[in-house]
Length: 317
Image (cartoon, rainbow, N blue to C red; front, side):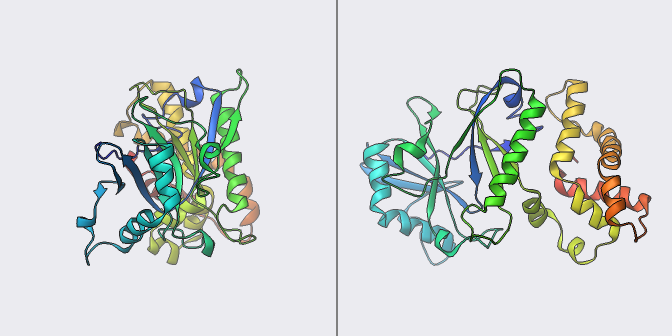
């Protein structure tokens, strides 16, 4: 068996890999997305050996040396010494790829102490069927407890893609409010959610998942340090109110209008213009109330919105 990297999880809105997911389906699974390091293990029955890898390549004992990053060393040791994980791979899912998140510090450093240094399984790929196995949580939780929870959602047949998106954004807020794997009551944001539809394939014939990330996580990862430290009122408003999803929705409108599948930079001007007017319509009442005693220069605000757009969706530029 060869090493098999995990899929690229695309954005729910405006990503060629996930285009059509909301329009064509009514039955979904939601998982919390945690911020660690991607890993994979599999029992190779032909070699009679447990094998493992990170996101990019297989790892063997020959790869472990004094220069090896600590997170790889710790993951290798964890797998080698976890009998339940071996049983899961060897007896329950032999010759299947077991994917998960090795929870070590990445961007988010405030998970509960008990959550760290564990391998949280989120998917199992069956190479014989060439698909991910449904409902793995109920199949393995009694043997191996560290499995990301699943939430099944079924929409009515007549629900629009826009309404489904709103429902998923609500789920994102609810899961974020619960603080998955975090200390109770800390009120800190997680990374987001992953949305799965097991019966759906994109127009390339690929089984793909989608993701929604919290705005707090996006700000933490993508807002430059200089912007955090030297922030005008206009920059603050753009950072506080403009989210990635605002941008994605405008891109989706342009896509629907023009009928393209791949983004073209020629639409950047149209994107920024539409986004600016949507931003004013959605947020002027809120920000004028919040900042009523502070002057706002709208020319600077428009530039701040443009700059924030480039930070959040640099791939469009």
